[in-house]
Image 1: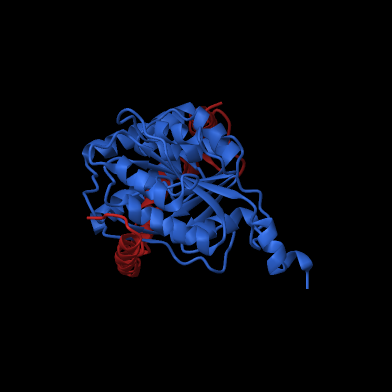
Image 2: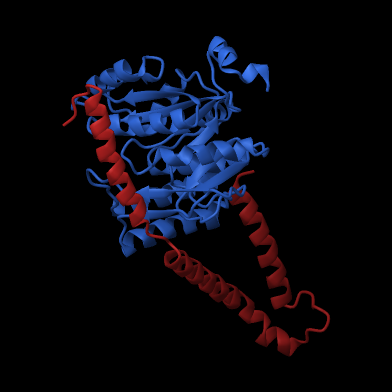
Length: 268
Length: 95
């Protein structure tokens, strides 16, 4: 038996056998997520502890009036200040800048970005992590609703999908991705998704060059990644649309999306 | 060079090539004048229709294979109530 794996040795080292020595930082932008936040943090903690990974959650709250920050402080008391890091901002400043803000406080070498509204489930994170660990030098792994296998292939990947979308919503989503795919050829099946794993320097590099906001932001990150020569892996995810609260998609969003695709076509 | 420039460059090249043959500036071996009138004029339309069919097929197939995942929803609801119970038992006030 390897003496370094004995219980005495492990206790002295203060760590337990895990082949993964990386630390994973989750950036969680929130606005009025008082109800959702404890549960998403619980789900995240569960996954990371099962996998024996070093982790932290950086909550970037845009001055929610509903007391999200108070809940975050309670969670920090429960899980530890090193695990739950609250970094609020003064007002509603948007998603892109929330990631930039959160990045300033990341201590991990991998960064996971996701939504706090349960549409993204932390159970997929182990698969995200295995993609770059498989030997491929991937800078980014993105969750995709459209694929049924992962890229590179993982045997444990399950087919992606959505819940709570009618045929019209699906058509709009497919149409949007088809448009962007044809015009921009990014080589990624789910451009508008926002459940992704980045190597810290890769995210810093790409986000510094990204200009757009809103829906287009996530797409621009992927197009820039390709233009900058980073390779992107894909893991199929299931997407459960907002259980609490409305998810909006109107003509305005579609027009601004098309404008965004055009701006990227002309700009990159 | 932005993507738009690359696309413009390639499409200009092929359009010019097509027009040179169409206006019989030079001729393609094996393609006589009758064939130019009959076939060459159809090429842009053929490309348009081909692209249209590809788009329709791609969208339709994408829509058809877009999976619903009710099982993920059920699982999530179970986990939410599990999380609530656990957090309450650890002294967190939830509503």
